[in-house]
Image (tube, rainbow over all chains, first blue to last red; front, side, top):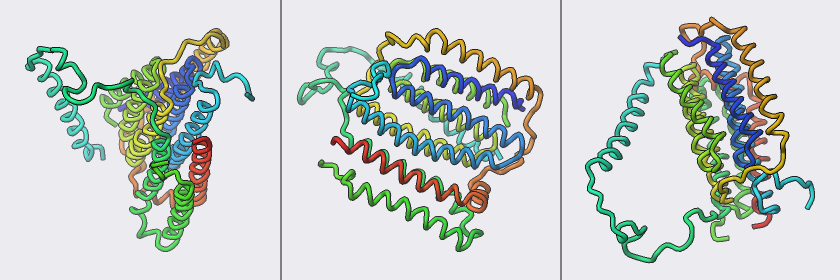
Amino acid sequence: MVPVSHVLALSVILFGLGAAGFIVRRNIITIFMCIELMLNAVNLAFIAFSRYLGDPDGQIFVFFVIVVAAAEAAMGLAIIIAVQRNRQTLSIDDLDSMKL
Amino acid sequence: MLEAYLPVLVHFLVVLALGLIILGLSAWVGVKRPSPEKLAPYECGMPPVGDARERFSISFYLVGMLFILFDVEVAFLFPWAVVYKSLKWPGFLEMFLYIAILLAGYLYIWKKGALDWSR
Amino acid sequence: MIAPLFYIFAGLAIVAALSVVLQRTPVYSALSLILVLCSLAVIYLLLGAQFLAVIQVIVYAGAIMVLFVFVIMLLNARQESPTDHSLFARRLGLPLLAVFLAEVIFVVVGHFSGTVFAAGATFDGGPGAVGGLLFRNYVLPFEVTSILILVAVMGAVVLAKKQL
C-alpha cells in the first residue's frame, strides 16, 4: 500500500519541475509544455484525493481538465504560430514589445 | 480490478524485450564493414539536398487540430455508449446537441478551406 | 494499489519531467513529456481511475502531444539560445519556487503522513460509472465543453489561416 503523502509528493515534484521550467526556459513552446506538466501534476492530486475521499467527482473534474487542455493546446499553439509569423522568433526574450 | 490489466503489463514487457533483443542482437551479431557507398543515405537515386529538419506545411497543424476535435468527441462517446440504455431519450438528446455543435465546427473548417490540401 | 509499480512509474515520471525541463531542443522536451503522460496514465490506473488512464493516453499523449510535435516541426524550433537578460528568473525565481515547494511538501507530509488509501476501490472509475455521473449530474458542463471546443477550433483556424 502506498501512503497518500507519496502520491501527493509526486504531484508536488512534477508541479515544481513544471514551474521551474516555466521560469528558466526561453523557448515559448517549451514553456507551454511546462504548463501542460503543471496541469498534469494537479490532475494527479485530484485523482489521489478522489480515491482517498471515495468521491468520484474528482475524476469528472480531471476529465473536464483534459478536455479544456485540448482546447487550450489548439488555441495556444495557434497563437504561437501567429507570434512566430509576425516576429520571426520563438524566444520570449525577444517578445518584449506589445506593438510592432 | 487491477488483475484485469495484467495482460497489458505483460504485453508492455514483451514489446520492450522484443525491441531490446532485436536492436541488441543486430548490434552484437551483425557484421559491420562500412564503406562510403553504404553510409550514403540512398545507394541509388539522387543525393539528398538540404536539411532533414525542414519546415512543414501549415496543413499538418490544421489536420492535427481537427483530429483533436474528433478525439475529444470520441472521448465523450465512450462513457455515453456504456450508459446509453439507462439514459434513454434525454441521453440521446444530450449527445445529439453535443455532436451538432461540433459538426458546426467541422463545417466551418471545411468551408474555410482548411482541408484543401493543395492550397 | 500495487506499491512497486507505483514507485517504478513515479520515478520514470520524475526523470522524464526533469528531461522536459532540462532539454534545450523542444522536440526532445516534447518526447519526454509524452513519457511523463504515459507514466501518469499507469499511476491513474493504479489509483482506480481506469477510464481516465485510457483518456490520458488517447487525448493527452495521443492528440495534444501530436499537435505539439507538429507545431515544433512547423516552426522548425531549434535549440534555444541562453538568455541575455531577464535576471528576475535567475536571481529570484528559483529561490521563491524552492520556498513554495518546501511549504507545500511541509503541509502534505504534515497532514497526510501515515494515511494510506483504503484497500478496495470505493469508486469503480470505469467508463460506465464515469458516464453515469457525467450525463446525469454534469450535463451543462458537458454541453458547454462542446461550445468551448468549437470556439477553440474557430479561433485556431482564424489565427493559423490568416496569412497563409
